[in-house]
Length: 293
Image (cartoon, rainbow, N blue to C red; front, side, top):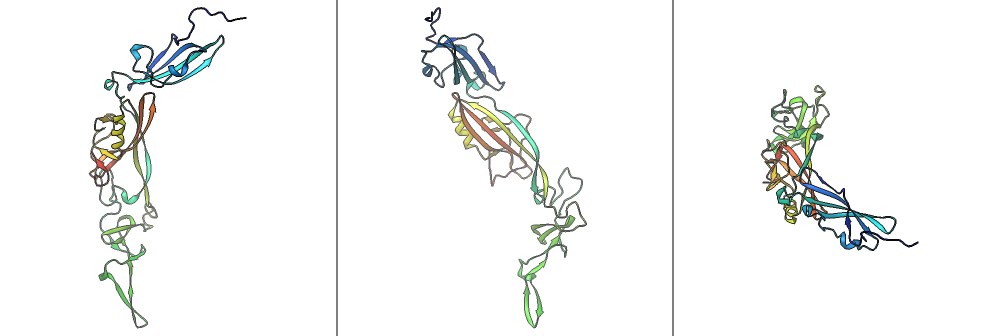
């Protein structure tokens, strides 16, 4: 029995009621839109990536991906996803960055502790090692660097130069190779069990991860150029990548506190999706090593 066709012949895609638009609150809008088509419909032309949404009010939404299911009676159901930036956000050029933070502890060398050499705020005791060191037999012998320190002794009537001397010990059994500090050897006095044999401590670490969408290639290139740069504000140039609640400023070591440490890019519809990471340091990222902007 032949198929009897009535109504719309579906040779052009017929938009179905019930299509949706979803806003993420940061400027990215997405739409899932359903069409009915005939089996003879030229899908490839219709679903070209970047084609606008069929509703003129949402023409800034561009085609990203699609799927089709073939139903009975030579009818197909075409489901299309569109993405775009709401025109209320930066004239539709870019979204507001959506940033989250991760806070925890990581292992650091004890000599990098802010309370190691001099007393730091927030600690009730210290400094850990101090700045005054005296020779002690608790630590290992170390190489002599100053010729005036060489010791001579007579062995079988031959003069022998001893090129080792006692190391130096400060607070809590902190051992160094010279009276002015030099290389930190470790904690060598068992009378201080909280430090003896330990060389590391748990330090606070904070990082941020975020995502921003833009339709401008220039934004992508600018952010990639800013990689490995540190700022004292929540922005890198015109790009505010940190939320208002993030700590900002110049660290105790003189460098800006927040470093753009990663920037990854992928295409999303006709947009660029920029995924970034920022590393925070209370000491700061020193301008001799990292670009401070």
